[in-house]
Image (cartoon, rainbow, N blue to C red; front, side):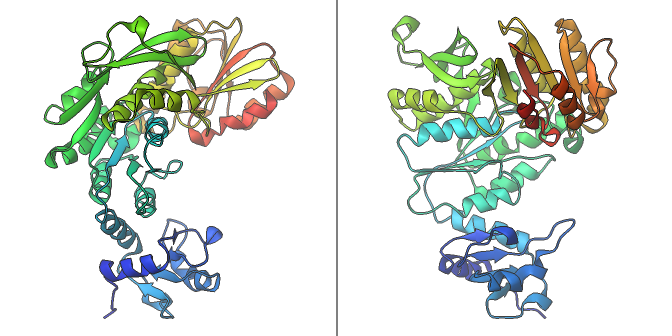
Length: 439
């Protein structure tokens, strides 16, 4: 019988490897510990010896045949061992761990909250979108004794996944941005999304821990009835109250607290560099978290005004005489509708919409794509370009359709707009950001 290494022993190997973990043989760090994960098309066990040759201190495998030296550690299951190791490491810390999930805006919220908390604390946050069953453990294993806060983003596309991630990260606080029509295929419809995302609330309820919640979101409130709440919103006397202001393309707003100044004219106006007025509530969430952890209002304002979006999220891009609202990192029916509604209010004389397919909708794909097209017709948009097979299959009278992004790019090469404001929105797999070079 194979002699599998325990989590406690593996933790000592991790510490001696200077707490540096690698899972990709293309990006190995000398002295690190390499975890040989499996995928549908690969088995990294086969690369364990090469990882040692490349300078890794240790490699972790789950097939005895590849445990060929003392530096190659045998475990029962590499992925589960990585997750158990991350949980063991997390238990060594008493700093606040804040978990974030939701259908839209997870990463934007994470980045804004990180910007705010970092004004006062050494804060670790999930890098990019490392928010799944592998990314969360890898994030946790980057926490060190210098950190005073940790923000853990959690993504999911099926029920049970958020609960599993909470079991690993054991958060002290939670924030669900919203619940909408994302990953309908995996969750089995909107009710499945509600059940899956709210697993975070149930986990924190058992701990008698607190959640940050948009008080104006009826869906979230119904799901969080038994939770300890720290509230933010517009319509009532919440812990943090905000008021949006119109100032061009960017989100501008003021905020106060339950017991703070109530004369809005006496409060400073925060002018962000984030486009899309639907991002106001994301900014207010960051204010709420910051104030709870006693970040001074002046520092919060500085953080939000200096934050510049990237990674194709809510970016305002200038190209020659054109202005591009780039939101091509991801898309689902709710975020697509919000972007379109926001774009309708834009004051630009000439507007183009370049919209790409929304992924992971399963049996709901046809009706949801048609609903977006119907909305475009209802709002009387003229210059609409629909990209992808799902949008191409919808019924409409005068919108241009393209089977893929390459076809759209070829069209733009011969039809370059000028003095036009353009919304680019679609799921990540559509890679619509590649169209920028044509604009």
